[in-house]
Length: 196
Image (cartoon, rainbow, N blue to C red; front, side):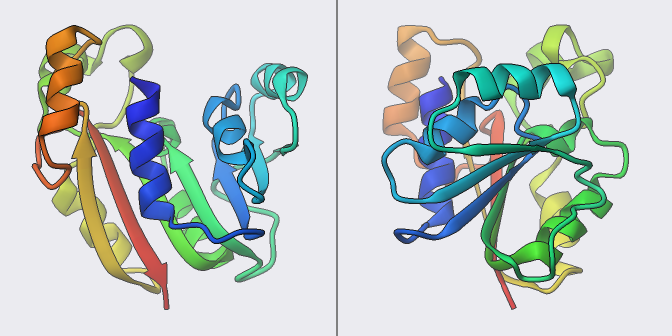
């Protein structure tokens, strides 16, 4: 289902050729590599975990990777065209500070992918503190992320969702093709905004 998330993020980013993109909390670089693959974008992945960055660098192609803290981005104001974060804010205690930093360094657009607390995925994986890879995650609501973005120098905030049914069953894949991303209960919540 990673492709579903990637397509939604890519659509919301609306990157132009040769623009720069910072992937905050890139982990092993799966999305970073996808963003960098043949699109003419200058992509950098940032994470604070040495082992994950090692994996990302080993499997990387055209993208760069840097070690860093999402809450204190070592970039100048408005120095990167677009800034994205895929689920990393769900695992950062002070996620609002990280979002503020993303808005500070973005020149044109900010996009975040989050776990949606108003979803079947939350009912299956998020209740009671979460299970497996979801353990300890903060599950966001659309109103919560919209309000957080509205408090920053961001405008034209849009919220979309995907992954309406947990798992990768044929039924789940069919739902992804048929249901519009404007429905509020997909497990993957994407919020995007323009820098003002």
